[in-house]
Amino acid sequence: MTVSFTAILITMHFSSCKDLFQNEFSNNGSISQFVKLDSLLKSNAVKLKGRKMAKVVLLDGEQETMNFIADSALLAGDFELFADIDISKPTFFGEYDIDKSNRSETYKRKGKKGPQWVVLKRGNSSKPTQIEAEYLETNLLFDSRRDYKLILDQTTNEITEYQFSGYQKLVFKDTVFFSVTGKFL
Image 1 (cartoon, rainbow, N blue to C red):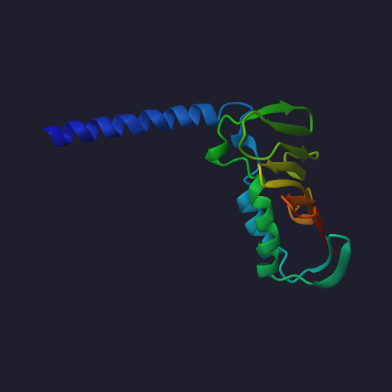
Image 2 (image 1 turned 60 degrees about the vertical axis):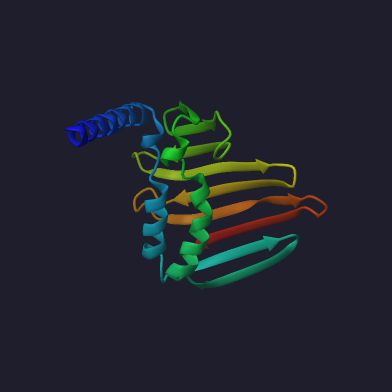
């Protein structure tokens, strides 16, 4: 009898949490409406394999420009940088205020977790055309800012260009500025 009573309590607890989570996290205007960025990045790493691209890397004043055929491993590595701005994760539940306009949504951080802000711009259809974000991290030893930008083709949902830039400052070290821009030709 005790085992079945415990099982019932556990089942009731999880089912009530599930309902609460779904209601709060998927109500009108919630983060659940945000693009599933993880899926978008993974599918683009596969779709864009074999495409010609230009990449410009700037690290502390030194610039390197490359033209090459993209492979999925390189793209997966570059796109992994954008995982930090995926605010559709349950970790960010309740962490953002959302301002919606006709063709854009701005997610502004309320708490201390995640990007400062994320802007999702949409074209004529509901598909995103651009995603921008800013991520700041500061503590006693470290100061960092990262700016992210993804530009997408409205019809194919393919990434046409991506940018990742910012700086990093460690205590007793110089500030290092960096920028990576990839564009598919």
